[in-house]
Image (cartoon, rainbow, N blue to C red; front, side, top):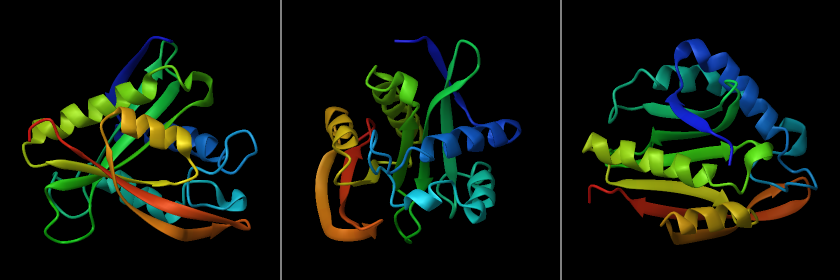
Length: 183
């Protein structure tokens, strides 16, 4: 495994993160990778309308509506190798839970970086003393991610069959959850 460091995404590094993220999302639906986001091949990039909310969420206190925290793993030359983010649920009375999103660059997949990013986010969530659960949703067809989350301790708690129809394919949506270390 390549050497890396995990650091918070800062406002000054946000544009570089979006460039990395769009490259990552560009693989969605390719024959080599398959679908890992509920986006069609023609629209596999981070939506413009969500960029401002993502950036603003980094400054919102945890527990308040719209908060988000995000980290990147950087290689020795400063390149982004992966990312993970946690954000508050949009539903009221769910401040003790958060949603996870993540990705790993194609050059370092299946080398332990995904597990390290999850552990980093889990420890951070536990340190807040507010967050008790980390939830995620994943396309059922994304078996590599489902296996990674299972190995990290996430439990499958639900599945919505035929949730998405993307580019002529039907996808289920799995919900998984992990109690934070502070529980």
